[in-house]
Length: 305
Image (cartoon, rainbow, N blue to C red; front, top):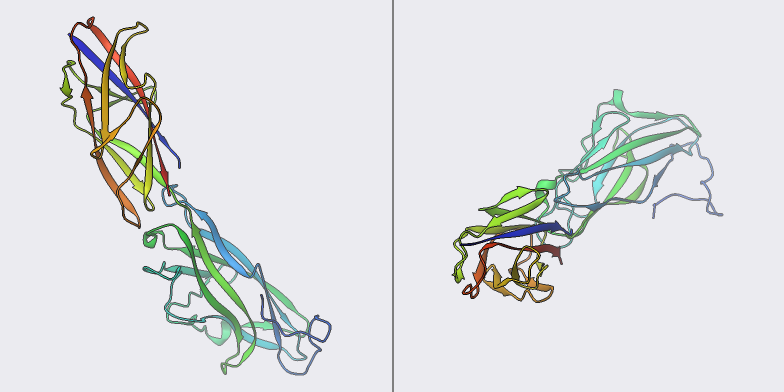
């Protein structure tokens, strides 16, 4: 009786707008309220988010408000959309919702309706002439809205508005996040794990398709490629002997040439994908072969485009 074991090793590839004086410095002091808003950096980007990495999509950024006027200024920092609708976008598809939080004063300043909600007068910021105050903000993206890879942004204005809705100063900001092309693979069906490898028992070795239900599970931010290689170049080997049984594989209906590393193109279609691709093993001629356990090690990796 010939009983092969197939070992599958799965791998994952996986400008501020400021009022300025003649020489580019702060404007000359006046008797009116004049707030200089300095955001650093001017682009608040959540960099390198991996949808399958298990991390949250957030970033913390700072703003300094300075009173360049000659009188005390009382105001609310207000975020306003330069162009609705609300959400981070790359021009197509559903925007990614987000929250914008004032960590210093524990306020939600997200401009969901086009502008931050105004707060009561007792929560206004008050600055004396030449006084400055720094505020920390956190940008948090809703990862449930991530559907593909790319750079998603929204242009906003951060304004210092007084109780009569007058703008005392402001700056332009870009909010956004970059989503990495990413893919992960796994197996489902008849296999067992041993020492970090997936072991597939093909049963009694007979010529033809082995009756083993097995699927390759792929999660990806878009289209992807699958690379397959065989340690024995498409042959099941009896221990360290020179006895071999040839075999072939197919993934998702696509045949795989195991004589060298081969790349199989995944299904077409953009956007977040969760595919289940059947894996088949086609056993070659088993006549006149010595009995024993025949095996091979197959490495499968996936790369998101």
